[in-house]
Length: 257
Image 1: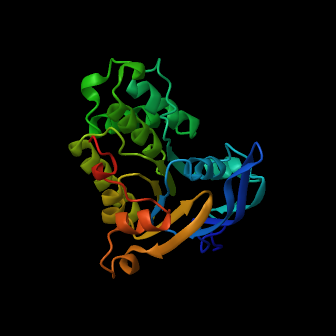
Image 2: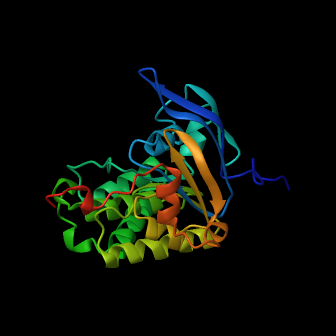
């Protein structure tokens, strides 16, 4: 019996990745490896290149230079095969505002080539799981930010992907919804899936992730296991501020405040 293509390769392998917009590098020589079955945090200040990196991982942006390998397959040459095994929760909630939640999740299942009856039954189960069944008749354009994130997560789960790309998945989600989403993601890791997470809520990353990478101005400045980062007295927030060159400011900086 043969092995699955790329079975023993990392979930994500990036080598010397670069993306230039208007003469400025949004991502500048990024090299990164994400092991399979791991919960990986990808951090950086606003404009550091996180979303651009995810867009290149999805094949939505073409690298200016460098290589991307996902689940043992090359991007962009095997983009369609790669996308079929990825679940995406985008930062800007690219949802269809004129569909209801169940319609959108079922549509996502059909896009992943699930049979109609399977897509419909899974969509109904996921809508109930994410406690959105009280809004079944509402179109997504009427959803709150937190509800949009929940329905995006439901759509990302419907085909049981091997890799999740999550860009600020907890933004606007209340504590109960965030706890549910975290429990579901931990269960996905237990079954062998890989989570690639960006978030500005560093306490969440510190609790969830096994390994963390931090980028600044498109370049990698930290790549280490959380267990190693926790050995010192610094919190993840302290490390983040130090390595991205943040300047400590307080109200004392303004005489009138």
